[in-house]
Length: 122
Image (tube, rainbow, N blue to C red):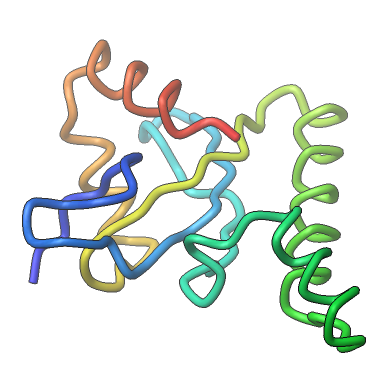
């Protein structure tokens, strides 16, 4: 299993199965994950598909609505906390802990990290 994070939908073997939405901040120690939300269950879903399925089945998708409200709160947080950046969607083949993700992002050269986070922005 690879712990290499990605912003793409697929890896070399197929589909990336784990995803985190994160907010980051920087301090004297470098990059820190400020907040995170595991979205592994919802990877590959599109909001329009969720709404269409709800109309067709009459069933409310609680996970998708929780994700939407959490994402909105994350966006508000970055709007009012100028030291917090994101949200970013980071996908991986296997689950990543906050510490592992921080370590991977910290060792990236600054230009590569900036490009990676730009590609992961949602």
